[in-house]
Image 1 (cartoon, rainbow, N blue to C red):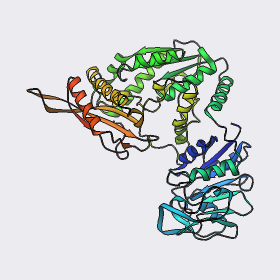
Image 2: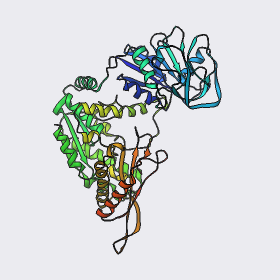
Image 3: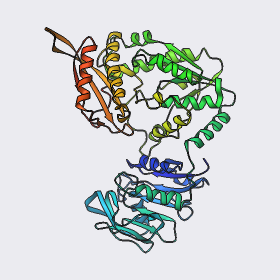
Image 4: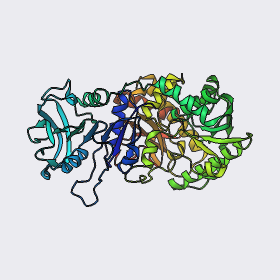
Length: 510
């Protein structure tokens, strides 16, 4: 990338959001731990630096203490919340613990003429979230914005292109936050704002051609957007030297294997479909514990994929659909996050197969992956597909997995998903699916008493899956879907709707 904004992470929950907002301005940016500031400072491609917030106080014994030697005074800096307090403390300003935590909406009562606030008027709403506060400026600072309760809401270091704000411009509730970031990234840093899906495709294809040369690459397709876009990028770079493998584990949605396989072939991909249902069902026999099921699926997938990949001569690379949040998580200031889902990426393949890994999407957020997929002409049905877990319906069937249970749930799920599509609700939902409960309940059908299965429907709204709320689907729609499931799926006599949010509940049930 010819130019970039460097975001130094102090552990804030909002750091990824800063990156997403900067990229909305068509400017490439990277997140790195604050500990890497000095080694990255010399990169001539870095046009500006943003210092993130932090859960720490500047008074904590082990608070992040960023080395900005070679950055301050050379390139523009925007310090956010903790970053602002850190620079203020170094500049000799009093940073005191607030008697009352300053959290939530506030309004800038005064704004001093400044490039950072071009096009932003006094009274604009901002979002505060800090326990410390800069109570007065030092002689090295010029105050450029205040609120009724925060005298130093924003400041500039004198004789520096260094700006700081005690609020969060990256969050939705800061009304003019994107304008402020535009003023910094485009206006002050001078970025061109030309990092587009088209440019990304051209740059990535050229880089892949250089990286891979004449080598063969194998990639596991899942039917999801990440692996599909990764495949299209690799295909554009190396053509038939990309070998895609799509494994039917018997846990996909109804008719999904045949439908997705056909879609990939229409795209011209070099793809092999593998029917491995029997192997997966055998591996899952007798297992009820969720983690045991995941491990059995992961182990069997590695065995099947390894066997199929060895049919291809001279493979040196394994393609993966890793995206930027996965990368950030593994190198965050707090170290790798606690593993909540063990099925996101199938581990063990590169080591077992002695392959190098190529990850064409490792720079992109999920929404950016979709934009690149659209640029590449990906089938809209795959592009807009809801996230679907790696273990598939295995973690939507509570208890032991059998082919009969899978077949039943596939029918229920099909009715639900098709109903969402027919009613124009599918694109309003981030993820939806059905869960087969280990519960049988009494029902009455006609003049007969029944004792059959209960299923739960789950639909959530979200932006990234980290948090989610249950989707308020119309009651009339839920009633029609419930009736359709009970009438058409033999073995089901009760349908319930999951209205729990994440947290505390996960999106999937297992």
